[in-house]
Figure (cartoon, rainbow, N blue to C red):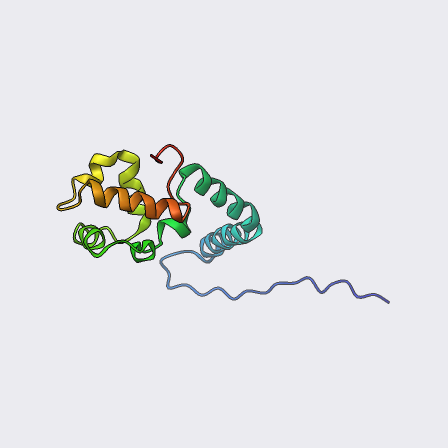
Length: 132
């Protein structure tokens, strides 16, 4: 016939005495359960992450893009670099606060700002409402 008694799990639990074996097993099972639930819900977690990115407005691929990709003039590029701005996301965050945030950067004037906005517009990175 059919043998159906294959479902067995045998565990040897060794502790150093600071925790009871039953408690160690219980804690380990809880941790394992949490990890399995993360794996089981990975599809919905990715969907939630994508939704959160859309709500934030700046997708991570854009946020992490280096400012070198904007092909700015040497002056504009160096001003941003000296101010510690190396990613497009940081530029977009400053622009969301207003032009004055960018214009406050030393030696970064109106002409550099216009060039920056034009470069962002060419790559479709300038948020709606920011365009001149």
